[in-house]
Length: 241
Image (cartoon, rainbow, N blue to C red; front, top):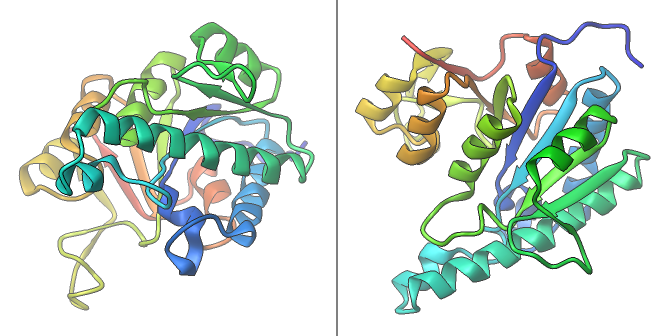
């Protein structure tokens, strides 16, 4: 185990499905999954208890299906199933790195994963296993960002690590506006008042109500997950007032 002391003991890492797609923009890029798995292994070597909530946007988005006329609940359930596919792919990548992993799903499918049970999840973490939470929170109309905030509160994680393709939170879209300013630190209220795209408002409010700080950072830069749990200044730190 690494002798360096981490700032956080238990964390939740929120990964979007799009990150797993890599440059292709759709599906799962095994090289990206392997890169994320290597970063997770580095964190596990620090003795940090790590849970992961993963999205499914690289395969299916419920809101997109709804916009095309599909029943919203049906479309959202399809999105939840997409997150399970991603969770199993990430589990495989982690176990190829000798990282013990468990997938827990909010919708029961015992042949491929455990059902989500809070106490069992915490026990896995205490035993040094990475836990991947899939299928959202089991209900339509909720995003995986909200699920990440909920799981953070439930397992008493100290921080949420919000992995993105950008360096952090900007006052404008940096891909359209090269002059967009990066926030190094910002409050939950300012995020909500400005309508910044950190997470959806439900997820941000849940973190605010439970005092869960959020670190938004670029996961494509190798070693950034480790830097985040060590407390180094990367990305944007979202906090209370």
